[in-house]
Length: 190
Image (cartoon, rainbow, N blue to C red; front, side, top):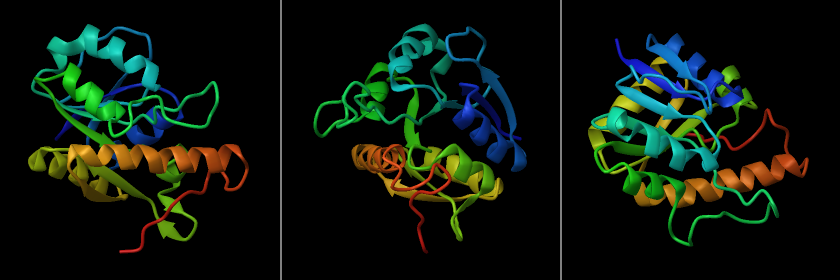
């Protein structure tokens, strides 16, 4: 059985935990801003972008050798009109640089909590896109997600996290602008 530690107990952290636990993973949580011991082989950071640097600084030793799935969309919440990472970069690339002893992946940022919980986007199955440079780590995370009844696709290398964050940003702005609902989003037909 794979063990997963999720940072964050909000809507996304809870929805991700539900998917992974329904697939048989053992899941524990560390609340945002709380301290705790990482017990999982896989660690999911379901926290705001602004929390990443603090988590990396506090937990770098515990995260060494772990698969770390970064889920954020680094929006500029002051203007809601762009991302705060440099052009061509991503929150995931920044985290990977801060955690060189971890295997950092991007995932879950192009889905809403409601679509993870229902496992549907409209009439389509929810699909989680995963990006990263370690094929075995991506295979592990894809397997955990699919065991939980949600589709997952390897979206390519860590550099693809930039595009995934752009998709996540677009989806968030559409929902915030009431163009789509928070139970909607983008679906993928295989």
